[in-house]
Image (cartoon, rainbow, N blue to C red; front, side, top):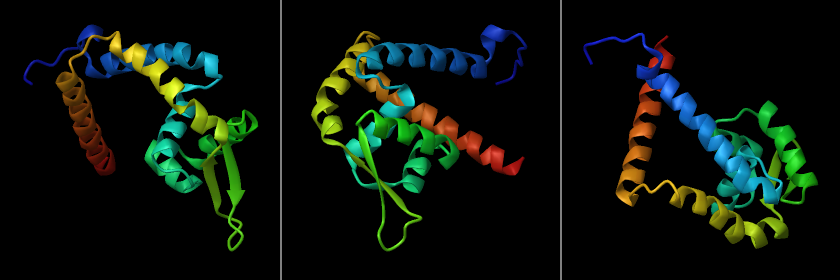
Length: 148
């Protein structure tokens, strides 16, 4: 990349920020009937893959610290989506598991979100290629961040 631009519309960081905000709005509308936020949906995605996760493991997978995650999980528990239980042998460890409500609503929630993604009209291979490129970019940024 030779030419360095200072134009806003030619900044990758701004394009990513704009797309992120638009995705958040789209997901907020899709998840509103379930009284879920986008970050809460991400928690459910992780738990639908593997229930019974430690808070620290959830935080690592979602790139969220416990200070952000804990209040969100408390709200999700109050809404009936998860259970939080301390391990008897070490009460410092909190295990997060799906509630029956979350299990029952999994397909309905997923279909609602999937209907939004379908409207993007992105070919499946382009979709996964974009995810791969973004993950590679994220990895490169993480490496640079560790050097700074």
